[in-house]
Image (cartoon, rainbow over all chains, first blue to last red):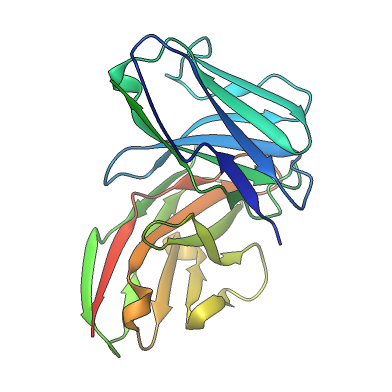
Length: 117
Length: 114
């Protein structure tokens, strides 16, 4: 149980385009979803937290106009990288949790490798 | 804010050797503690977690971890590693009841030779 599906797994696109990444909880309701970014050989850096039906809370230094997050339902969150540039190339990982209060583990998607040419 | 420090960047062991990976956290309140594993090409999977109670927690695949509150530590152990344990291991923490996200350490790469 507790499967999180992330799509696409890999995307390559030209600089200036926008890219949407989907994150779905397949067998549980994800009250809270998180988006992380992972650089090679480094840890996961939290980008934002979203509760279903609310605006996302972004971490310091993360541009909310650049990384648009929508959590419109209990099973789906999307991250849109707007006007992507090569420096946005990274591994993006979504995570979902069934409650708001930290008492359940976070479950992770397989990640999306984004390459901007 | 919480922070997590993992002392070992890369650990190389032979099969059947014992493993201990260090993890220390920084936070003034009560925390939940986790160890996740990431096998090559796969997503992060939960190994074990500590919320409260017995500070020695047992997880999947023979792993265990001990929470030592006085040392702000949550070290991961396994008495005898296998080649299949080769993976990246992440320690993570969040604040209890606060609804906060997991904050991760930088990870430890474990390489086990057969």
